[in-house]
Image 1 (tube, one colour):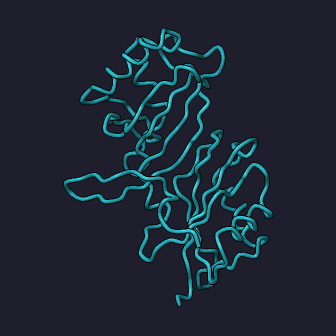
Image 2 (cartoon, rainbow, N blue to C red):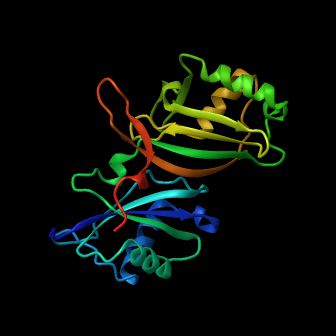
Image 3 (cartoon, helix red, strand yellow):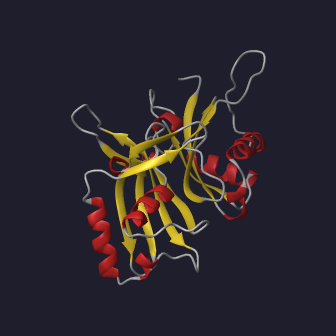
Length: 247
């Protein structure tokens, strides 16, 4: 038997907790794991710490129904037991929804991130005119936007600005007629990360509009990894909790 196991924990982050930063979420889970009496493995050395990694950190002010944390443990009971213990030690705004045992050799949560799916709504009074048009017009403009070979966008950093092509990082973009919101699946890897606000800024620029400040309510629905990738084939996107098995 192995002397340690790698678990992938999926959790939701909603309500007031959306205003808590990533470092505070990390510290919360360090305490939560201890309170839940999970047999967490620690690093060796002068200052040992729990062996856990998180997938793409969530920006402050965003809710999520698909956050991920990988943790190494010395012993395991069952997925159900781990979920129950962690939820009992957590708060209502952070809910654990699944626990999977990762296969040997599986990449950690942070390194495995390929994409993320979002739901994007506009706050009242900040809806661009384009999205107040009839549904057929919205769909037609989005189709034309996605048909472009490239979508240039200038990213402004602390030290410099650079132009990037957003098109290759937009995997899916759709308008929900009834709910009046957008869903989009975007590249979330460390090298080519695309944000929902960047996509909307680029789209509205083509319609002659600007995205108003604080106009968006963004919810992350899930985070994805890639399987079956090769030099010739980019592979398939699957939710990160589809890696591993219930134990």
